[in-house]
Image 1 (tube, rainbow, N blue to C red):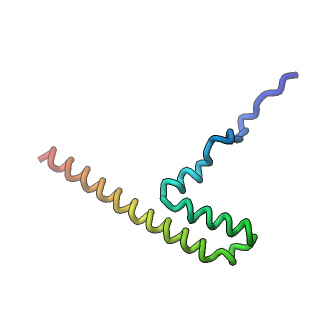
Image 2: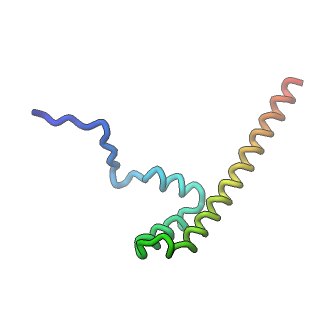
Image 3: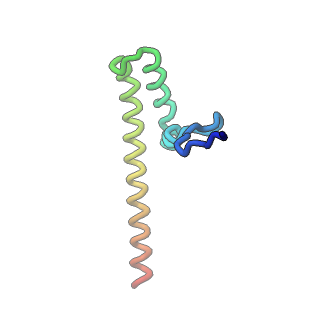
Length: 87
């Protein structure tokens, strides 16, 4: 009897990046994220890693703020282009 592959096999090849790692890398906060992971691996207690967590949090908030501003500018530009073309 031949074995059939399971549709829920979510294993990735070793050279394929984790989607979460890819997303965090795009934020510019990857090094801070890895610092949190290393601290957690070392101490096994998130309370001992508050400095690393805070640094990562601040980096992510800065990225989110910049991204929000970028999207708002794009939306305003698109709105202005649409308004000018209909005038």
